[in-house]
Length: 244
Ligand SMILES: [Fe+2]
Image 1: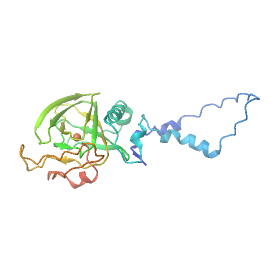
Image 2 (image 1 turned 180 degrees about the vertical axis):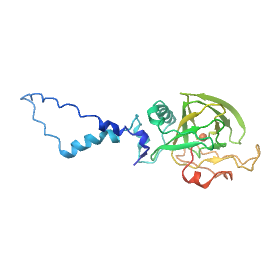
Image 3 (image 1 turned 30 degrees about the horizontal axis):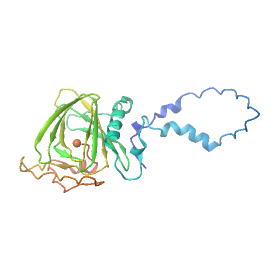
Image 4 (image 1 turned 90 degrees about the vertical axis):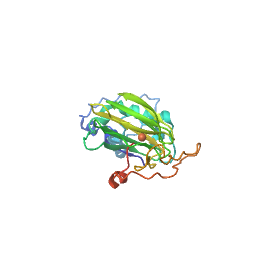
């Protein structure tokens, strides 16, 4: 069963709305069979429906219990949809000067979605996504992305502003940073979920660092050789999963 952050569910406040006045029943046409009255159980389910409905449209492929991979276009749409719904992330997001703040919004057998707050000056380490496809959309603020090749060499840089979306293929290596003076908020999605990230070894200097293993194309899930993680990463961060 997919796990959804409460912010992704329709607001329980809907249940607090006063009941609509009962409309007088329309006369039943003689030619139509009489419909049975709803059972108590069905009426209860109807009442609870606002509690279990997602607050935004989530593609069924992103809620699957069957392990698999969601395509890049769907991941980009998913992050853009959530970023475009500030009622989902605005009440939840935090920005902390001492570390990037993040929480997972969705975890299914096919996708994980993260909400991340970037304080000015915060950035990721150089990493890939363990063979997962990925996407991010900037919900607010400005972020820069340094793009690396598989030998850890810098090959380009892009700037994303609010509303920009980008997808990452399985071999993508990058660093994302908030180098501005304002807060930034992003939505990230990865498929398959929970593949371990791989980092540039902390004690290695480019260009002699061990290259990131290149996943074989066409294989459903490839993680490649594990790259030693920098010593600065804490066990607590790794144990709770790591936003990218
Ligand atoms: Fe990343």
